[in-house]
Length: 231
Image (tube, rainbow, N blue to C red):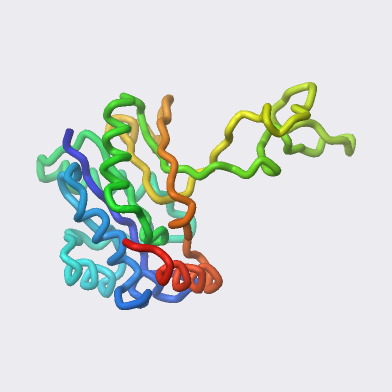
């Protein structure tokens, strides 16, 4: 299977200015994800998709290709990951280079256990699903079976649509949320306008490695984590 490893990194960042090239420890933030991708045995090609020349240069210095500058209209707050992935695939298809799937790796999730990307790809291939996402388990107190939505008449209904609430914590089914570390999707699904398709496989991330950098508070958490984990 031919898989494109795609690291999206736009220049505009309000929470942490220039975060993708800001030094986290001794390396720019983006270099952590680049290094994880370079360890993979399954990624056919690894690129950074960016609208920013400084990020492109940082990627190249880190040993990762940045073969194009992404159009400004695909680097807005409203731009979607799907659009970014479709743009990258179109770039390669114009050169008659085709991939079976795309592995999207967000640099704002810098820490991944060694081998995690390949474990995810292996599970994706075996599952034959349209996509795979990395997830973390939702604590039981936030489980959707214990969550409520407000109705128009000011009452509450169980968010899952059930008529009776599950009373015992032990009876709750596991629930997960995307952690943003890894997304893998078949090319045909992407071309049909989705990052997920009809069947979604998953892999659980190690919560000890989890940080998603959007604010300076997140950045400070990442700095603290860096002193506690082994990459």
